[in-house]
Structure formats: structure tokens, C-alpha cells
Length: 402
Image (cartoon, rainbow, N blue to C red; front, side):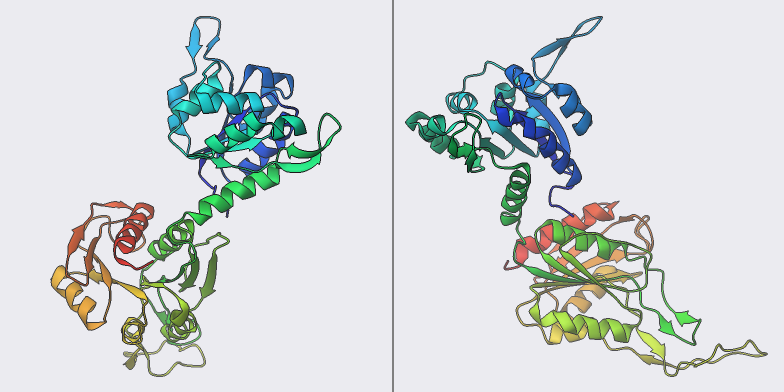
């Protein structure tokens, strides 16, 4: 999954021959999962049609400050467009537009939107060789780089027939540049994160097991959040029906507490952050029947033994990892969570209670409190598990040395 998934991108198209490539550029951004709106200079419509770009972007294309319909005039609010975007890309950026961007000259909607944008702005110059090498263009590009992001022009055959610098970067290069630049600035770039999720099933016989109601949703949301923050993620998942797709996430499926223990310690020594969100069984049958146990009169005694304590072992063998545990309590919640935090040598614990409406197993919401090693407590309201995952990583980033 691209880091651009779910992002809002404003594409500014100016009047250069390279504008014909913007149709492909829009398709690549859409394929990466981004939402696109296009703003064109009036002259750029001589090179690519608004109909083409609106069809591909699935949004109206804007090129003037107001548009007439049968009843009234509709204002294209440049401020709203500038505030809407997570990122703005001006491609192609002609010498004319570069100069106006530098000097704050606003004679079209695109330039008004640029001056209203609060987001990172990328620009991809495109012009003929002599124009590109001219001292005024060089100076304008250098000035624009102070606060904006240059997507370097390439070398190749130009519209004039000359061969040299000034060719707009190819659409694939533009998308890759934006993705890599975003990734380089993410707070967990270069970090490795281990997350456990879901229940474990402890076999009684080939068809029966001891388990719990954990859905794995909280752990999976944590994995996605970590990946979106730039981390390489190892998700060790107990039995659950959830799917997850992200190029930075490696999923390891396990069934029992023993399998989860073994998988955790394949990765634990090499990670920077570990979050034990799985609901691991505390006990497992001493023996497992090799054949299905047939129903018969009377009771069926099952002798249980304690499973290996994964979290305690992680705490005891911790070597600079930032270790986070979970505590699901039904009484004396804070006291029990603090005890677990200390006993298992954690850096932070996430507490939730079955008494809190909307915080039970299997739901899409959760209500948490976060307690750190200094016993500081931060309480959160009921939120979606996606939002809770964001809150948890916000607390981790305040405390972890990453």
C-alpha cells in the first residue's frame, strides 16, 4: 500500500507541452489510493482537456475564479482548495508560472490556490533547454526551493528538437519522488515495530479448543498505524478473520500461545518498539487428544497448565526496546494495570475495562487510559479503534527514543 493512500492531492497544470503527461500522472496518483483535484491555468487547456482530467480524477477540474451555469455564477474558492489538500503538485511548472510563484503574482486561479495552500508543495519544471538554463529561471528555482520541493527536471529530447535539461520528470518519477519524500519525514522511518494481535487457541482435541473473544482489530489497527508512520512492522496474529495489506507489514500467523511465544522471539531482539496487544491464553491443556473426544455420560475433566508468559519474558529480556502491554480489567483497573506495568518491566501499558460501554471484545471502538513508567495516567474518551491506535502511537512517540 502506498503512503499516498487516503491523501488529498491538488495537481496544478500549467501551459507546457508536458501537460499531456498529466493524464497519466492523475491515473498513477489514483492507483496509489490518493484523492485528486486538478487546477489548470487557462492556457494549459490548449494542451490537455479538462474533460480528460476530470474523467480520470473523478472530480471537477477548476481553471477560473467563477463559473456560470444557467441560474447564477459559481465561485471556485481558492482558499478552500488550498486548505483541502494534504499535498500540492505543480506539474508541469513552466518558466512563466515559476516566476509568478516566486513573486506572488496572482493572475489565475492556480496561483491563488498556491498562495493559499498550507500543505507541502512540489513543483516539476518543464521548459526548453535555453529557458531552463537562463539565469532568471535558475534563480527562481533556487528561491522556490526555500519552502517548496523541487522535482528535478530530466535530460532528453525537448519539444524544440534540442536534447538537454528541462524535460519534465516522468509521471512515475513524480509519484515516486513524492512518496519517498513523505516517507523520509515520517517519525518511525527506519524503525522496526513488533505487534501481537488476536486470540490464541489452545487445542483440546483436533476440533475443540480453549480461546477467547478477541477479534484482533486493535492489533491490526496498530500495525497499520505503525506502517503509515514509516515503520517496518512484524504483525504476529492469532486466529482471526481479518486481512491487512501494506507493503511495510509482514504478517506471521500463529494458533497457540506456544507458537506465538516462538514467533515473538524470532523478531523481538531486532525491533525498536514492541506492542503486545494479543489476548494470549494463560492456560493450555496438559494433554491434547489425538482424536475427537466423543460425548459420554458425566463430566469431562480437563487438566490445564500455565502457558509461557510472553510479555514477562519480553520485559525480562528487554534491550533498549520500548515495550507496551495491554491490561483488560474488570475491577481495580488502575491498580491492577500499574502492578502489571511494574511486574513485567513495561515502558507503557494501555488499560481498558470491560465495564466501559463500547470497549468490549470484537467491537469497532475502544476506550483507553495510558499509564507510563512514571505512573502518569492519560485518559481518552471512547473512539474508533483506528483513532485509538493513533492515540497510542502519539503517546509512544512522546516517550520512546526513536
